[in-house]
Structures are given as C-alpha cells and as structure tokens.
Image (tube, rainbow, N blue to C red; front, side, top):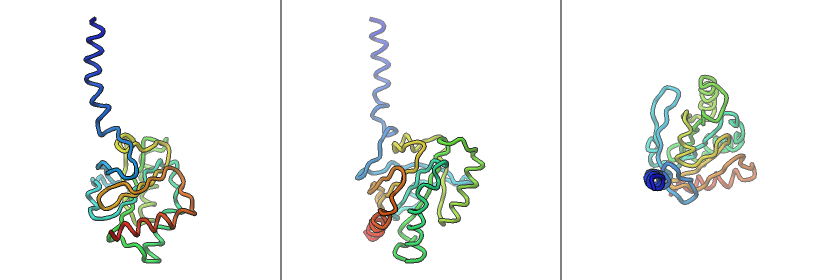
Length: 179
C-alpha cells in the first residue's frame, strides 16, 4: 500500500511536466514559443527584438554550420543584389546549439562572428540546448524555421535544404513579408 501511495504522489508531480510548454514540438501552423538568448557580447535577444518582421531562424550544431550555406547565400542575394526582399521586414538569425558539439565556446564564438559578418546577421548562443526542449529541435543537426510576423511557424526544414527548393522558400518569405 505504501508503494502505491508513493507512486501516486510521484505521478501527480510528473504529469504536469508532460503537459508543460517546455516539451513542445514546433510544427507548421503552430505559434512558436518565445525564447531568450545572448550574442557574443552577452546582449539579450528574444523574438520580440524583431517585432513586425518575418524571421528565418537557423538552429545550428556548429559541426554542421556549412550545411545550408547555399540557401543562406541565396537569401542574401535576394536581399542585397536582387532587392526583392528588404531587411526592413525580414530578419534571418542564427542560434548556435553549443551543447551538440565538442568545439569549445571560444572557437564557436569566433566562427559565429565570421558568419554574422558574412550574412549581416545576428548570431545567438544556446549553451544549454534550451531550444531543443522548447521547440523540439533535433540535436546534432541544422534546422531552418520560417516564422511569419505573428510568430506562426510557416515552414520547418531539418537537415540540408535542396538547392532546387531555395527559390520556392525565398518566394514564400517574400510573400510573408508583404502580408
């Protein structure tokens, strides 16, 4: 009887955790839970830092940092060369999954700083894999999430984006930025 009571008490404390927002699996059509991360200068950012903008969130294991380089270069070309997308209503950011790598944080910050300059963007650091839990992002991977201005997930790509899909995704971002 004692064991049954103990198990009942333990289960009462465990059940709320099952339904908490901390174990959400972000999916297309779902509002993305907010987060807070810092950049290399320890400045804090949330999604509200870019209110009114469509967001491209790259959640990246540093060991996979080159995986979607062609897609990011195509987005930059659309902004800087073709002028079909404006930084006034679009923001692409990177969030580095520091926990998924063997690389030391100092090296990660150096690599991220180079990427931030190359893509004229903000790179944030997830030292404790919080976004893996909050959004259900996979570890040891590269995930691209497209959020509309209301922070509804409009697209989610895990792994390498085929170059043949680049223009279709970019057109979706352009369309969302005009809404």
